[in-house]
Image (tube, rainbow, N blue to C red; front, side, top):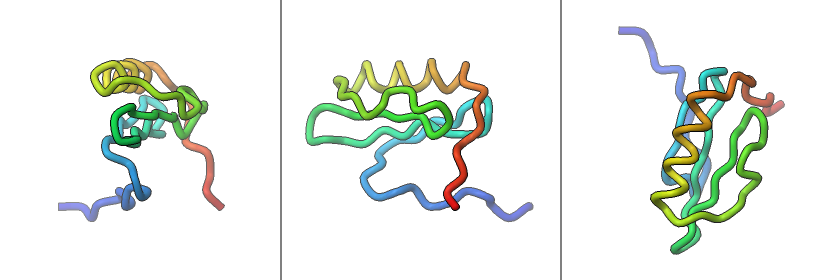
Length: 73
């Protein structure tokens, strides 16, 4: 079995959706509202949503976004 290429999630991330382009949409819990942000295109821009809506938006966006994640270095 190949070694995992996944990295640890950033602190505060409660869910992560992999995008079609290889990036990810991270959801962070704000003690009620959930914030989301795409690592490729910036979708969500940290705006707050109720949890069910945030997960739906993140999943829908992840299925369509083709932009690769931005480099960290």
